[in-house]
Amino acid sequence: MAGRRDFDLIVRGAGPAGAAAAMTAAKLGLRVALVDRKRFPRDKLCGGGLTGRAMAHHRRIFGTDRPDVPLEVRREFAFHAFGQDLGMTRDAPPIHLAMRRELDHHLVDRALAAGAVDVTGHALDLDLGDPAGPVLFNQTMRLTAPLLIAADGVNSPTANALFGQAFDRDRIGFALEIEHLGADPARPLRIDFGAAEWGYGWQFPKTTGTTVGVGGIMARNPDLKAAMKAYMARLAIPEGARVKGQFLPFGDFRKRPGQGRVLLAGDAAGLVDPITGEGIAHALHSGELAAQTAAQAIREAHPEAALGRYTTALRPIHSGLTMARLLRTIMFRRALRPAFIRSFRESRSLREEYLRLLAGETDYAPLMRKTAMRMPGFAARALFGR
Ligand SMILES: Cc1cc2nc3c(=O)[nH]c(=O)nc-3n(C[C@H](O)[C@H](O)[C@H](O)COP(=O)(O)OP(=O)(O)OC[C@H]3O[C@@H](n4cnc5c(N)ncnc54)[C@H](O)[C@@H]3O)c2cc1C
Image 1 (tube, rainbow, N blue to C red):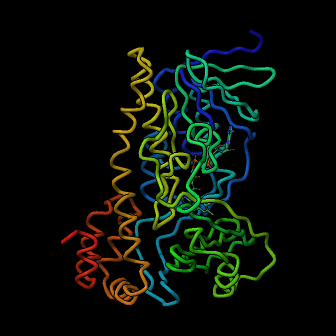
Image 2: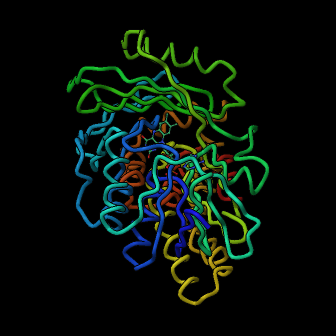
Image 3: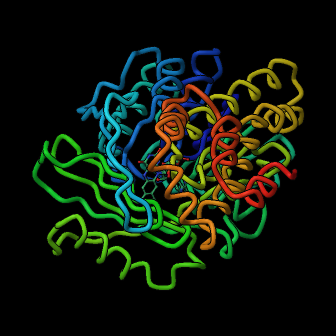
């Protein structure tokens, strides 16, 4: 058949999850196609904040200390919650801040240099009816493989084809963001819990400007534009820059991350932290895990085994997201806000625990314990069932 190309693995979507999957598969010796409907560099709405956790995954998967793109590095954080100043934390583990246009292009280049075949810049349809495995095709090419990793983002057309919808509209998050141009080293990296309902706001300084945004559960934010306007006014950011919006799968992950011979990774599997909004780390890690489990199943000539193994491999990420969701219900419940604000402002160790979480040095369990200890008894019971 004209244009038919057979692979061991197809990766659909070349953001951080897809690039990590393709890189891992190529390193494991698989013939892997990296497909994206866009040609890179392409824009992606994102704060571009790389936590220590994301940097560690990057280092392991791509083999270099830091991505070779312009990075702003910050160790000082200004925390605010529900309009109140919670203080500045200095000497925190560093957060690296990148523009996604540059970061994603770089990661794709690394995966291609490792041997992945470049199929970016092509819009391909999915055919799940072929018994030999998933097929991506258009009028001129037909890509086949026993397994497909779908890393095609929050609006995942693959998840939509498998489950009838890419996400649950009642639980999805939504975020608005602007790029304020002109580097301003005096602007701190700042996080405002509650700048949106059941969500937060962020001011992320970059080498070329500042990214400012708000995001929260969509169903609880009927007027997110007003929240964005108020937040920009609070930060003294002039209006005028184009406000862009995107869905954010705020902790609403898929318990079964795929179906048959299709594995979902990154946003397509809903792997975004419901408190921090962080998704790049889980995207990189899940892409890696998907490729590793796919490689094992292909070696054993048993592609159907990949999904079960991948689901098991994702368990630690799923349990972290479940805990974070529980903690979020405590943080954002109106009756508990004063206790949360007081705890976070007065407890240096709670703030440090949160920063250690962002740095990837700990997980949610110790943070939940510390938070519960400082909250009223009924909140502790809600967190730990005691
Ligand atoms: C406003 C905002 C701010 C954020 N800030 C941060 C932050 O500071 N730090 C952080 O860690 N996370 C942040 N996130 C979350 C983060 O952006 C995502 O979790 C992350 O991009 C997920 O990576 P991914 O590879 O799964 O998907 P994406 O990065 O979305 O990549 C998906 C890719 O799939 C491609 N694609 C889509 N459809 C098709 C198709 N039919 N065929 C082929 N390819 C297709 C797209 O072109 C795209 O390249 C933010 C999100 C938003 C919305």
